[in-house]
Every structure is written in C-alpha cells, then in structure tokens.
Amino acid sequence: MGRGELPPPDGLVDVMQSPAGPSDVVCAFTAHTIIAAGIEEPDIRRRLPPGDLGAPMEAGFLVWLGEQLGAPPGMLDIVLVATGDAPATRVQIMPQRGESVARVERARRYRRDVQVFGDSDGRGIGVVGRGLARRWEVAVEVEPAHRGGGLGRGLFAAARRLVPIDEPLFAQVSPGNAASLRAVLAAGFKPVGSEVLFLTRPGNSAPD
Image (tube, rainbow, N blue to C red; front, side):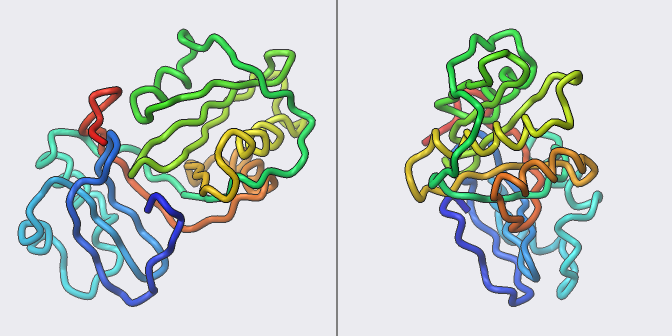
C-alpha cells in the first residue's frame, strides 16, 4: 500500500495485520480488497460472504470492524497517486504556521512528519506527511473566495516537490467533492482505488 503497487484483479480479499502508521484500513481496488487491521483473520472471514466483492465496503461490516477496533470508520475516500517528479507550478512553496488550522490539526492526527506549505498570498495551504503504511500523503485547503481559479491544482502539483523523486504521493478525496477531484486529477494524480480508515493510533503515538 505504501509503494503504490496495485494488487491483481483476482476477486480475492487479503487480510493482514495493522500497517505502520496511525490507522487500520479497508482498501478496495479493481476486483481486490485489502483489510489491514488488528483483528484475527478468521473473525474477519466469518463476517464476509464468499464471493461478494462489495461486502468489505458495506456499512454493516465497517461498523462491526470499527467496534472491534475501538475506532469508528472514517469517510469513504477515492485514493489517487502521483510521484515526486513534479511538473512546474506557479505556486510558491513556503512554510506556514498552521497550528490553528483545522486541516493541519487533522493531518497531525493521521500523519507523521507533517510539512505545511502554501501560496505566497496565504490563499491556500497544503500538508504533506507520512500516513497509512508510512506512505506520503497530501491534503489541500483553499480559501472559499479563491476557489475555482486553479490554486488547488497548483498546490497539489507543488506537493509533488516535497517528496523524494519517484516516491509515490497519495491523495484522498471524498467521492462527492468534484472540485477537489478535478484539481487532483489536473495535477497529475491517477485514481487507484478507495479506502476507509480507522484511526486506532492517532498522532505521534503511531508505531513505526
């Protein structure tokens, strides 16, 4: 999951132990699902009807899994990936003081090694850090008055300059957030699947 490698579309469900980082997860790909959580595999298998590709993402299973983990399921997100080989961008990368910004506070619960950046006029911020399975992740917030002008796309593109060359960089977008999805796609990210996170080890208590 942390390297951007996709599983085969073989109709299988892989069950594995909790990944590095603060969250357990259910990841859905094309005809393949990965469940990485601190639950015994037989207990998970008993909850999933054989051959039902959609079962791991059904609400009933996700609620049950959250109860077992002691952490409710998060939002369903589309997962997209690009690499650290960034195109040119007009957005100036600069550190920001973001302790009071909700986006940054949330990022520090779900990620380690968080870097905060933004455009030179303070119209938007982005955060890059290591999240699920210690992968690089990015999130962006643009001030409402400045949305629709390409700033979000520029920030997502700028984030690709903050990770090592050729390293995968992941973005998670709600399926209903069409504007954000367009910005991520325009910045060169490609959709690879969807996921639901369970924040079982928030913040800096996350194991390596």
